[in-house]
Image 1 (spheres, rainbow, N blue to C red):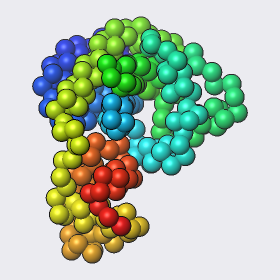
Image 2 (tube, rainbow, N blue to C red):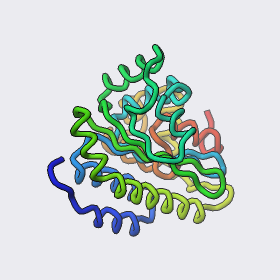
Image 3 (tube, rainbow, N blue to C red):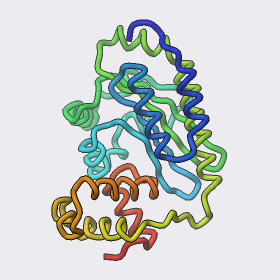
Length: 239
């Protein structure tokens, strides 16, 4: 975190992005450029569909969704009530539930420091851009002071691009899954593990992972579980 780095290339990369996959890459590039643990961008569009780009560990994303942590997450609750950036240390972590949530998050690889920027779109969209790291309060204070303006700008660039993607969507929205993607998602929905799915389809687990990631990007899903639920809700797979 020594010395301020030039983030102009990140803005240029964001400007050039034309798909969710490219926003995913930007989150990783930004994380590495800033030398921090994680970057998260999550938004809800006017149709109620959720999209996200995150470098959080997949087990934590899965657990967060399974436990419906959004209902108790002090960051989510705090940002819904604010229009300005929020340092996590300024939120209320005093309750037993909040402390247990933070402990669980840190055990899953989430840093003890966070800085979240809430953003609201023109038609009911709500977005949250977060940087996360593990360090002491002094180091984090210096980091946020140095980069706060840049992060706000980048957050709004992300949001602008998300709105562009939404504008380009068909009203009913459906980027059709390929037959192999349908097969893979259907077997996963039926409870098969990845090894069983790969065996059933006579493909390698690496190839299966390509199909799953492709389907996830097409569906704008945060993880595989979210992708399966979205595909089922849109009638793309039937189980």
